[in-house]
Amino acid sequence: NATTSQVDNMKPKTPTTSTISNVNAPEFVPRFTSEGNTPTFAEALTSTNVTSTHEPSTLQLNDSFSQLNISPHDQVDQQPAVAHDQLLEAGHDYIQQHPFMLPAADPYMFMNHSTNFLRQPLQHHFYSSSLSHTKVPLLPHQRLINSFFIPDKLREELTQRNEAQWMTSNDQSLPAEVHVYHSLYPLEQEKLGNYNGYPATVYKATCSIDRRSYALVRIEGYSNVNESAVSIAEVWRNVRHCNIVSFREGFTTKAFGDDSIVFVYDYHPCAKTLLQHYFRSVNQMFKPAVSTQSKGAPLLVSEKTLWSYIVQITSAIKAIHSSGLACRNIQLNRILITGEGRVRLTGVGILDVLQGEADQQLIEYQQQDFISLGTLIIQLACNLSTPSQNITQSLEYLSRMYSEDLKILVSVLMDENTPKSIDDILTLIAPRILEKINRNHFHNDDLEQCLGQELENGRLVRLISKMGFINERPEFDMDPSWSETGDRYLIKLFRDYVFHQVDEHGQPVIDMVHVLTCLKKALMKRSC
Image (tube, rainbow, N blue to C red):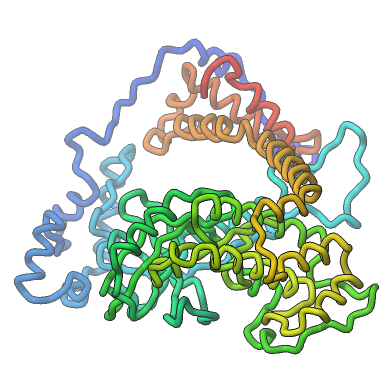
């Protein structure tokens, strides 16, 4: 019947004896190449009555434009129009004369056509796994396709970071280049603070030397840099810590139209300050303190997260104080969240360079770091965007909502009459440090497991790329002997076996496990 014939037509054809013998056939040598004396498609157009207005080289073209005092983009409107029918007729004649030749691309085809592409958001839902309530129960030997690849949450986070690396700005008021940095992109929509009275703006920029992205903190209207400030900056360059945004260099510039000093730091894509993360808008900064919550009310920051922040910030303070420096920037808008529970101090060294007197008041500044840390804990625990004026009330709230250890730590930090060192603080939080180390190790184990799932992806891509280079070359498409002889025929058969399987009903088999299994078995003893 008709149905049976349709199914038979959809099934893959069994190779005949002559087809199988093609494996041992002599190697096919192409008779037609693009390097011969055959005229190209552009030459065929020139030989007709169609007039070509293109110059032989782009350099000569630009020179002719400069003599006429016009730009190349304006020239397109002054060129005589070429009849569309003549182009089609010339192209048809060329193909009839040279059926096995691919027309050579005209290098000037897109020269005067500038298209503005709108940047579209990534379609993350294309990769997401199915919802939990719609999943079909799996047998012990069955797996979902998502289990073969990186988890959706981690993939989306890394993809967003990669996208942020290449964000560009259309603001024509920004300078094209500042020192060795170009492609400036503003990272802050509102200026939430300043340094020592000077307004600050943060940009992302690309370095011309190493092609990496950096964060530029521009201090507007400052140009008084002395020798002591330079020496302080050199000390900060040597401070390296996992919870500190590393300082790279500083320089003065007039590229913005005024006297500015720029501090260069490592760039962490998609990072947010604690102020932006927990206090969403600027309007929330002026809301009254929430200190009347009940014992069962939800907290702004859980105690587990709060202790994690304390351990990381204390570790950064330890590294800074050990270098003979002071932080001076432990504030909600000076601490970045750069990952899952990962915080880093940013803007380090700016106040020292602007004031140039860090050594004279070092002890005082270091003691102030402890008070700033205690104030930060109170703000996060009590949902305060501004420092509390009533320390006693804040401590009472901490005793109701958090553990006694946290209250004791804040009391010690806020005590201005008792000198303390960073080692004293580390002694108080030692048990919490061990908990943080354990969580970090578990997190590293999860990342290594995700990395193991992607181990063979690079080899699989190289294998598929080589198959794509060989199978059914378009310039030899008219001559089937290209893919029907020698090793090329074996590769074609392997491609069909992997990707073109059909079931007993003639329907395509879309089995990702079959594809991955075959590709991983291919060339296991050879490097791909």
